[in-house]
Each structure stands twice: as structure tokens, then as C-alpha cells.
Image 1: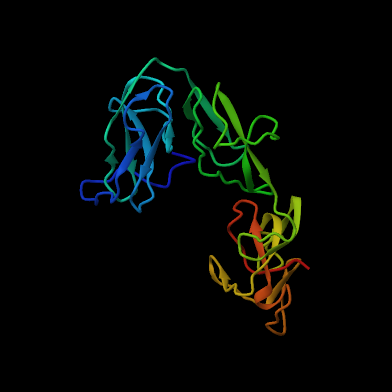
Image 2: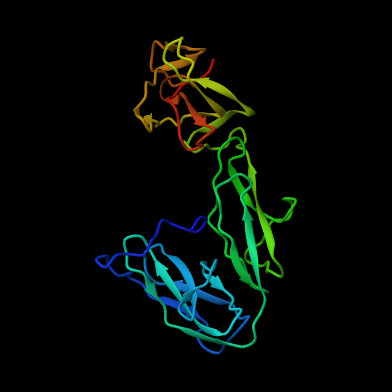
Length: 270
């Protein structure tokens, strides 16, 4: 379930039980159009699925749900490595109410699943999408035009609607994902040559340079040479393990455009 899935899946018969209790409130005297809230008392991070008369309700997976039809409502909680658990049923009576689809357009980010919301109900805020490239910082969900931000606590649904993800770039001086500071950016990007010899033209498209934190010990591939800089296609070894930017442990962290949280070696274009 993109946008709200934490990797959970129904457990097998040998998996342990979830430790907490699932509670729907209110639990009595509920009419259609009355918003229900589910809570979980355990320590596990769970996903919720709302059910009506024993069948899962399509696109009804958040903590909030406003019943549009009469029936017996339950919530099933699931977490990876645990048996799923279902709440006690809550009976809902009254007249049917229209339902509307809330579509999430991530504007180039990871996909987010649609949500079905009863007229007058609140939208469950999905997990933030992610995006690569220059504008890679998620800045909220907006109505068309990207000027009016959706207020998940106060805005209610009165018709089918599309919400759009807004993105922004890192600013100079911002803390980067590597824990250092962004000191250079370019929207068009540039090719960083990663080959270790002049004849190797292997490159990657880059949008940012980040000064590594003083305690940086290496990238995801293991220990990095902390006494080199990048100069064209040639690596130059510094004579010492200094502390200046471009030298030693305060060298430069490269943020790949195809994965903003993945880094290359600590190198600096000169």
C-alpha cells in the first residue's frame, strides 16, 4: 500500500500475536456520517484496514473513517512478522451518504494510493512521498495551483478532489541528508566523472555538493580515501589529512540525482 504501508503483511500461523488492543470510537449509537477513529495500544507499528460486514473497504486504511453505509464495521491491524488482529464490531445505522475519491498526484515522486472519503469526512494524511533530482524535498499536499495547502486536521471532503505534492530544492546552508551542509547547487545538474583514471569517462548527474560532517568515516561502499580531491579526471592526493573543506574528514559529499540519500566518495571539484 504505497504511501501508508510500513512493509507489514499478514502474519503466518507461527508468528506472534500483536501485543495491543484495537479500539474503535465511538462504539455505540453511530449513524452514517459520524467519523470513527481507531486506536492501537501496542508498541508495534501497524497498518489499519477498515471493513464493513466482514469485507475490506477499498481505499479505507487510515486512523479515521466516516461510514457512508449501514453495517457492521471493524478494523484489522497488521504488522510484519505478526498475526493480524481485528477489532470488535461497531454497528452503524442511518441513510446512505455519498463517497468521494481523493487522488494524490505526487508530481514525479513515489506513488501514493487513492483514498475513499465520505462526504464531510477528513482525509487521512499519507506517508510523505519521496523524489529524486533537484526538487527533492517534500513540501506538503496542495490543491490545484500549488498555492492552497490542504489542512488534514480541518479541511473536509465535499467532492472528489486531487491533491498535488509540492517539492522544493535544498537551500545553500541547509543540512543535507549526510549530516553536512549544502554549499553548492545547480538545477540543471552537472556530470561528475567517477572513473579513477583519465581514460574512464564514467559519470553521474549531480545537483548538489554537501560538505561532509567532521565525523564522516565513509560512504555506503565502506571506508573512503579522505585525503584526495577531484580535479577533472585526475585524483590528486593531499600531502596531509587536513580539516579544511576538500581535505581530510571535511571533504565533500556528493548527492546523486538518482538517489538523494546515496553518496559517492568524499571528493570535491576544483
